[in-house]
Amino acid sequence: MKELEAVIQAVPKRRVGPVDFSVISLKNTIDLVWDLSTTLRERGKTFHFCNAFNIALADCYDTYARLLNRGDLVLSDGTPVVWAGRRLHKDIAQSWTRVYGPDVMTGILERTNQQAAAQPRHYLLGSTPETLKRLQLRIEREWPNADVVGYESPPFTAPTEADLANRDARICESGATLLWVGLGTPKQDYEVRRACLSTGVTTLAVGAAFDFLAGTKSQAPVWMQQSGTEWAFRFASEPRRLAKRYLWGNPRFLFAAARTRQSGRITCP
Image 1: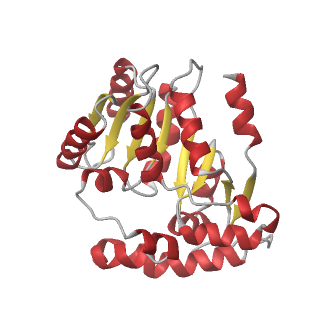
Image 2: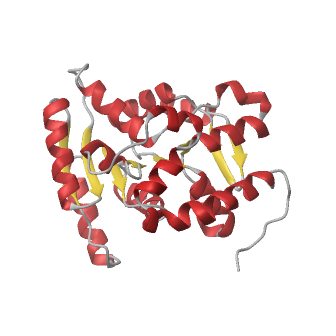
Protein backbone atom coordinates (compact mmCIF):
# COMPACT_ATOMS: atom_id res chain seq x y z
CA MET A 1 0.00 0.00 0.00
CA LYS A 2 2.92 2.35 0.66
CA GLU A 3 3.95 1.87 -2.97
CA LEU A 4 0.48 2.92 -4.15
CA GLU A 5 0.58 5.96 -1.88
CA ALA A 6 3.90 6.91 -3.44
CA VAL A 7 2.45 6.51 -6.94
CA ILE A 8 -0.47 8.78 -6.09
CA GLN A 9 1.75 11.39 -4.50
CA ALA A 10 4.01 11.38 -7.56
CA VAL A 11 1.21 12.21 -10.01
CA PRO A 12 1.77 15.81 -11.19
CA LYS A 13 -1.01 18.30 -10.52
CA ARG A 14 -1.79 21.40 -12.56
CA ARG A 15 -4.59 23.92 -12.24
CA VAL A 16 -7.30 24.80 -14.74
CA GLY A 17 -9.62 27.46 -13.37
CA PRO A 18 -9.80 26.78 -9.63
CA VAL A 19 -9.37 22.98 -9.96
CA ASP A 20 -6.13 21.05 -9.49
CA PHE A 21 -6.05 18.24 -12.07
CA SER A 22 -4.00 15.06 -11.80
CA VAL A 23 -2.05 14.59 -15.03
CA ILE A 24 -2.03 10.83 -15.57
CA SER A 25 -2.81 8.58 -18.54
CA LEU A 26 -5.94 6.47 -18.95
CA LYS A 27 -3.94 3.25 -18.74
CA ASN A 28 -2.14 4.32 -15.58
CA THR A 29 -5.44 5.38 -14.04
CA ILE A 30 -6.96 1.96 -14.74
CA ASP A 31 -3.85 0.28 -13.30
CA LEU A 32 -4.09 2.41 -10.17
CA VAL A 33 -7.81 1.80 -9.64
CA TRP A 34 -7.29 -1.93 -10.12
CA ASP A 35 -4.38 -2.07 -7.67
CA LEU A 36 -6.27 -0.04 -5.07
CA SER A 37 -9.27 -2.37 -5.32
CA THR A 38 -7.27 -5.60 -5.02
CA THR A 39 -4.75 -4.61 -2.34
CA LEU A 40 -5.28 -4.57 1.40
CA ARG A 41 -5.45 -0.97 2.58
CA GLU A 42 -6.63 1.10 5.51
CA ARG A 43 -8.45 3.70 3.46
CA GLY A 44 -9.70 3.90 -0.09
CA LYS A 45 -9.14 6.79 -2.46
CA THR A 46 -11.45 9.27 -4.17
CA PHE A 47 -11.56 9.79 -7.93
CA HIS A 48 -13.34 12.74 -9.55
CA PHE A 49 -13.80 12.98 -13.31
CA CYS A 50 -14.19 16.65 -14.17
CA ASN A 51 -15.21 18.41 -17.36
CA ALA A 52 -15.92 22.01 -18.34
CA PHE A 53 -19.12 22.13 -16.27
CA ASN A 54 -17.32 21.00 -13.12
CA ILE A 55 -14.81 23.80 -13.60
CA ALA A 56 -17.60 26.31 -14.18
CA LEU A 57 -19.33 25.27 -10.96
CA ALA A 58 -16.06 25.30 -9.01
CA ASP A 59 -15.37 28.80 -10.30
CA CYS A 60 -18.68 29.92 -8.81
CA TYR A 61 -18.69 28.00 -5.55
CA ASP A 62 -15.61 27.91 -3.35
CA THR A 63 -16.96 25.01 -1.29
CA TYR A 64 -17.17 22.85 -4.42
CA ALA A 65 -13.69 23.86 -5.57
CA ARG A 66 -12.28 22.95 -2.16
CA LEU A 67 -14.09 19.60 -2.23
CA LEU A 68 -12.57 18.68 -5.59
CA ASN A 69 -9.10 19.80 -4.58
CA ARG A 70 -9.25 17.56 -1.51
CA GLY A 71 -9.82 14.55 -3.78
CA ASP A 72 -7.01 12.07 -4.23
CA LEU A 73 -7.17 12.27 -8.02
CA VAL A 74 -9.09 14.70 -10.24
CA LEU A 75 -9.06 13.51 -13.85
CA SER A 76 -9.63 15.40 -17.11
CA ASP A 77 -12.98 13.99 -18.20
CA GLY A 78 -13.49 16.39 -21.12
CA THR A 79 -11.40 17.18 -24.19
CA PRO A 80 -11.73 20.99 -23.73
CA VAL A 81 -10.19 20.57 -20.26
CA VAL A 82 -7.23 18.77 -21.84
CA TRP A 83 -6.81 21.54 -24.41
CA ALA A 84 -6.90 24.21 -21.70
CA GLY A 85 -4.45 22.29 -19.53
CA ARG A 86 -1.99 21.85 -22.39
CA ARG A 87 -2.16 25.51 -23.28
CA LEU A 88 -1.72 26.68 -19.69
CA HIS A 89 0.98 24.19 -18.69
CA LYS A 90 3.33 23.62 -21.60
CA ASP A 91 5.83 21.84 -19.35
CA ILE A 92 3.50 18.87 -19.11
CA ALA A 93 1.41 19.31 -22.26
CA GLN A 94 2.52 16.08 -23.96
CA SER A 95 1.47 14.01 -20.94
CA TRP A 96 -1.96 15.62 -20.55
CA THR A 97 -4.62 13.33 -22.05
CA ARG A 98 -8.28 12.68 -21.51
CA VAL A 99 -9.27 10.25 -18.74
CA TYR A 100 -12.96 9.62 -19.32
CA GLY A 101 -15.03 8.08 -16.51
CA PRO A 102 -16.88 5.56 -18.73
CA ASP A 103 -13.54 4.47 -20.25
CA VAL A 104 -12.07 3.81 -16.81
CA MET A 105 -15.11 1.78 -15.73
CA THR A 106 -15.06 -0.19 -18.99
CA GLY A 107 -11.31 -0.75 -18.67
CA ILE A 108 -11.68 -2.19 -15.18
CA LEU A 109 -14.51 -4.48 -16.29
CA GLU A 110 -12.50 -5.61 -19.33
CA ARG A 111 -9.60 -6.54 -17.08
CA THR A 112 -11.82 -8.84 -15.01
CA ASN A 113 -12.04 -11.09 -18.09
CA GLN A 114 -8.26 -11.19 -18.37
CA GLN A 115 -7.20 -11.77 -14.77
CA ALA A 116 -8.54 -14.68 -12.77
CA ALA A 117 -6.65 -13.89 -9.57
CA ALA A 118 -7.71 -11.18 -7.11
CA GLN A 119 -10.70 -9.27 -8.48
CA PRO A 120 -12.37 -6.01 -7.47
CA ARG A 121 -15.77 -6.27 -5.82
CA HIS A 122 -18.07 -3.68 -7.36
CA TYR A 123 -20.90 -1.69 -5.79
CA LEU A 124 -23.03 0.46 -8.12
CA LEU A 125 -24.73 3.53 -6.65
CA GLY A 126 -26.92 5.84 -8.70
CA SER A 127 -29.09 6.20 -11.80
CA THR A 128 -32.51 4.53 -12.03
CA PRO A 129 -33.58 0.96 -11.18
CA GLU A 130 -34.18 0.29 -14.90
CA THR A 131 -30.72 1.50 -15.88
CA LEU A 132 -29.05 -0.50 -13.10
CA LYS A 133 -30.89 -3.63 -14.17
CA ARG A 134 -29.80 -3.20 -17.77
CA LEU A 135 -26.25 -2.48 -16.63
CA GLN A 136 -26.28 -5.64 -14.53
CA LEU A 137 -27.41 -7.69 -17.52
CA ARG A 138 -24.68 -6.26 -19.73
CA ILE A 139 -22.01 -6.91 -17.12
CA GLU A 140 -23.20 -10.51 -16.73
CA ARG A 141 -23.13 -10.97 -20.52
CA GLU A 142 -19.86 -9.23 -21.46
CA TRP A 143 -17.81 -9.36 -18.27
CA PRO A 144 -18.98 -12.55 -16.52
CA ASN A 145 -16.02 -12.58 -14.13
CA ALA A 146 -16.92 -9.16 -12.71
CA ASP A 147 -18.04 -9.50 -9.10
CA VAL A 148 -20.92 -7.06 -8.53
CA VAL A 149 -21.70 -7.34 -4.83
CA GLY A 150 -24.39 -4.68 -4.63
CA TYR A 151 -26.28 -1.96 -6.44
CA GLU A 152 -28.91 0.61 -5.54
CA SER A 153 -30.71 3.57 -7.00
CA PRO A 154 -31.22 6.17 -4.24
CA PRO A 155 -34.42 8.25 -4.27
CA PHE A 156 -34.13 11.80 -5.58
CA THR A 157 -35.11 13.23 -2.19
CA ALA A 158 -32.30 14.28 0.15
CA PRO A 159 -31.21 11.36 2.36
CA THR A 160 -31.41 11.57 6.12
CA GLU A 161 -28.49 10.74 8.38
CA ALA A 162 -30.14 7.39 9.05
CA ASP A 163 -30.48 6.75 5.30
CA LEU A 164 -26.77 7.42 4.79
CA ALA A 165 -25.77 5.26 7.74
CA ASN A 166 -27.86 2.38 6.39
CA ARG A 167 -26.39 2.84 2.92
CA ASP A 168 -22.86 2.79 4.29
CA ALA A 169 -23.64 -0.34 6.28
CA ARG A 170 -24.87 -2.10 3.13
CA ILE A 171 -21.71 -1.13 1.25
CA CYS A 172 -19.45 -2.36 4.05
CA GLU A 173 -21.38 -5.59 4.54
CA SER A 174 -21.17 -6.34 0.82
CA GLY A 175 -17.39 -6.47 0.95
CA ALA A 176 -17.11 -3.96 -1.90
CA THR A 177 -13.65 -2.71 -2.86
CA LEU A 178 -14.84 -0.30 -5.57
CA LEU A 179 -17.82 2.03 -5.24
CA TRP A 180 -18.98 3.50 -8.56
CA VAL A 181 -21.18 6.57 -8.10
CA GLY A 182 -23.41 7.99 -10.83
CA LEU A 183 -25.58 10.62 -9.16
CA GLY A 184 -25.00 13.60 -11.46
CA THR A 185 -22.87 16.70 -11.00
CA PRO A 186 -22.15 18.05 -8.43
CA LYS A 187 -24.09 15.72 -6.12
CA GLN A 188 -21.93 12.71 -6.91
CA ASP A 189 -18.71 14.51 -5.99
CA TYR A 190 -19.97 15.28 -2.50
CA GLU A 191 -21.16 11.70 -2.10
CA VAL A 192 -17.82 10.29 -3.27
CA ARG A 193 -15.94 12.07 -0.51
CA ARG A 194 -18.54 11.34 2.16
CA ALA A 195 -18.87 7.65 1.28
CA CYS A 196 -15.13 7.06 1.00
CA LEU A 197 -14.44 8.62 4.38
CA SER A 198 -17.27 6.65 5.96
CA THR A 199 -16.69 3.23 4.39
CA GLY A 200 -13.00 3.25 3.47
CA VAL A 201 -13.85 1.97 -0.03
CA THR A 202 -12.18 3.47 -3.12
CA THR A 203 -14.93 5.58 -4.66
CA LEU A 204 -15.30 7.04 -8.15
CA ALA A 205 -17.70 9.70 -9.49
CA VAL A 206 -18.34 8.46 -13.02
CA GLY A 207 -21.30 10.58 -14.11
CA ALA A 208 -23.29 9.12 -16.99
CA ALA A 209 -21.16 5.96 -17.23
CA PHE A 210 -24.04 3.81 -15.95
CA ASP A 211 -26.36 5.10 -18.68
CA PHE A 212 -23.77 4.76 -21.43
CA LEU A 213 -22.73 1.24 -20.47
CA ALA A 214 -26.34 0.18 -19.95
CA GLY A 215 -27.33 1.61 -23.34
CA THR A 216 -30.06 3.85 -21.93
CA LYS A 217 -28.27 6.91 -23.35
CA SER A 218 -26.21 7.22 -26.51
CA GLN A 219 -22.57 8.27 -26.47
CA ALA A 220 -21.23 10.76 -28.97
CA PRO A 221 -19.20 9.28 -31.86
CA VAL A 222 -15.49 9.02 -31.18
CA TRP A 223 -14.69 11.81 -33.65
CA MET A 224 -16.94 14.19 -31.70
CA GLN A 225 -15.32 13.17 -28.42
CA GLN A 226 -11.87 13.82 -29.88
CA SER A 227 -12.84 17.11 -31.54
CA GLY A 228 -14.28 18.64 -28.38
CA THR A 229 -17.83 18.73 -29.78
CA GLU A 230 -19.25 15.94 -27.64
CA TRP A 231 -21.20 18.58 -25.71
CA ALA A 232 -23.19 19.42 -28.88
CA PHE A 233 -24.24 15.78 -29.28
CA ARG A 234 -25.37 15.52 -25.67
CA PHE A 235 -27.12 18.90 -25.78
CA ALA A 236 -29.05 17.83 -28.88
CA SER A 237 -30.02 14.58 -27.12
CA GLU A 238 -31.27 16.24 -23.91
CA PRO A 239 -31.71 19.98 -24.57
CA ARG A 240 -33.95 20.80 -21.61
CA ARG A 241 -31.93 18.95 -18.99
CA LEU A 242 -28.54 20.10 -20.24
CA ALA A 243 -29.33 23.69 -21.22
CA LYS A 244 -27.68 25.23 -18.15
CA ARG A 245 -24.70 22.90 -18.36
CA TYR A 246 -23.77 24.07 -21.84
CA LEU A 247 -25.32 27.51 -22.42
CA TRP A 248 -24.06 28.81 -19.08
CA GLY A 249 -21.34 26.30 -18.27
CA ASN A 250 -19.28 26.51 -21.47
CA PRO A 251 -18.78 30.32 -21.38
CA ARG A 252 -18.11 30.16 -17.65
CA PHE A 253 -15.50 27.45 -18.20
CA LEU A 254 -13.72 29.58 -20.80
CA PHE A 255 -13.79 32.53 -18.43
CA ALA A 256 -12.41 30.44 -15.56
CA ALA A 257 -9.68 28.90 -17.70
CA ALA A 258 -8.58 32.31 -18.93
CA ARG A 259 -8.29 33.48 -15.33
CA THR A 260 -6.29 30.49 -14.12
CA ARG A 261 -3.11 32.43 -13.52
CA GLN A 262 -4.81 35.40 -11.92
CA SER A 263 -4.96 35.58 -8.14
CA GLY A 264 -8.44 37.05 -7.76
CA ARG A 265 -11.71 35.14 -7.57
CA ILE A 266 -15.12 36.27 -8.77
CA THR A 267 -18.18 35.09 -6.89
CA CYS A 268 -21.37 34.33 -8.78
CA PRO A 269 -24.27 36.63 -7.94
